[in-house]
Image (tube, rainbow over the protein chains, first blue to last red):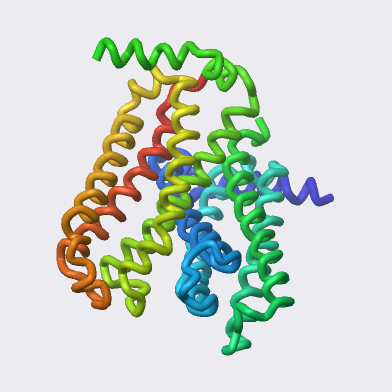
Length: 168
Length: 167
C-alpha cells in the first residue's frame, strides 16, 4: 500500500516540469548540492562548537549560555535553506533518495539532532543563571553533547552515502 | 614536472592506493571523513571571518574569537588533508588532469596565503582594534576574501565529483 503510494509519488515528481528542468540543465544539481553542503558546514560547525564548549574543550572563559547564544540561533534559518535545496534535489531525482534507506536514516538522525539542539537551546534560555558548576546538569549536558556530535557526524556520513546506495 | 609525476605515480602504484581503489567501502568511507572535516573547516573559519567583517560575535574581542575557534579549524584541516591525500593517490593521474581539482588546490593555497598575510601583518596590531565592532579595512578584506575562497573550494570540490570519469 505504502509502496504503491510511494512509487506513484516518485513517478509524479519525476514527471513535473520542475524535475525535468533540473535534470536537463547540467549545472543545477551540482549547484544545489554545493549550497546544500555549505549549509551543512554552517549547521554542523555551530553544533560542534557548542558541544565542544559543553565539554570545556574550547572557549572556556566565555559562559556556556553566551557561547550557545552566539552559535545556536544560526542553525534554524540555515536548516530552512537545507530543506529547500534538499527538497529540490529530491524533486530532480526522486528515486535517488525516496527509494533509499540511507536517506530515511539521515532524516531519522536529523530528527534526533534537531530535538537535542532545540532542547539545549530551550534549557539555556529558560534558566538565565545557567551555571557550568551544577554537577548533575554538567554530566547530563556532556552526555547530550557527545550524543549530539555522534548524531551530526552520522547525518553527514549518511548524506554522502546516499550517492552510493541509490536504487539502480 | 617530470619528477613530480614520478613522485606521484610512486604513490598511485602503492599497495595503499590499490587497496582504496579495489575496496568498495573504503573510498566512500574516506570521502565521508573528507566531507565531514572540510565542513568543519569552512563552517568554523566562517565564524572567524564574520567577526573580522564585524558581522558576528562583535561583543567579543577578535583575538578571543580566533583563539577559541582556530584549534577546531586546524584539527579539521589536518584530517581533511590526510583524507584528501588518500582519495587523491587512489586516482592521482585523473585528478591532476581535472581542472576543478587543480583549481581547488590553488584556491586552498590562496586561502592559506590570505591567512598568513593576516596573521603576519594585519594581526600584529590586533590589540589596538580587537575590541572594535568593525575591524580595520585590511582585516575586513581578509575575512571577506576568506569566505569567497572557501566557498569556491567547496564548489570546486563538488564539481570534481561530476567531472571525473566513472570507472
